Length: 161
Length: 93
Length: 135
Image (cartoon, rainbow over the protein chains, first blue to last red):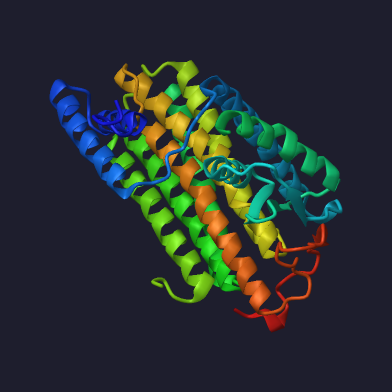
């Protein structure tokens, strides 16, 4: 399988993208397949570290959890902006110790944290596994550490490690 | 009836997007530091992309979609390059 | 835009609501960009426009063209995916560039690098509009 088709998921999503950009027809399907096959071989030539996903069934859980959190924090941040200076708010940095070591999982965590309004990934120290994030409305530091560690890091660990 | 609703909401949302782009432009012009300007530029790109999409809905044409895709691509590349530039002061190391 | 009177009313109302919510959230995000005092607070502001703001307008566009052409238009999924994947990357790069610049200039209220013992919490209440910080 991996000899003939090095990145099946990448190839499939590239074909899908080609068909979305053009209209669906047999000619476009064949052309898109040729392009996607070539692109997946080009990707294999770059030799990136191949991520290993252990639990496919947990990906929808992660997706819906992220979706809901983004929706809720959109409302929260919109409220903060609308209220303006009438309420005292303390933005601040939080340092979180992480047990997560997988590079792909860390990349996913970084994207999720930064895409969610209200939290932003600042930096990660690979040697001692400490992550620094910036929080817009920092009420309780322990709550944030607990949220990131238990709500996201544990799920990502189950998926990738 | 439905065309009236659509037309009014399109006009209103286009004005809101123009206001959003003005706010982003204010941040680009005002600064105070270079990273604030780049952040404003990124927000400006997003506003422009969404404005092009609403023009697509207004004219009922899917041609605008390609323009929006190109703007989104340019936003990513330019902001990433500028952030890299701010990191060390040079784009190519 | 004329000749749309056979466009179903429910779809028109739904498209209008999504458009207004999307552009309203984008506007709120950029208002936050103007209002917030320090750079690290401003980093949070554009994410409003790139998550729910862009999502609302893109879903409105998808819905509009799907109803108009009576077939499912899925182009906009590509932009949604692209925006949601790339915005965190650029914001992260920008935040790291900002913290690098602030550290090399020796700002006092910046947290130290994450090696050894790091301070657990540093408040950023002072605005960086100070005259000494022209960059």
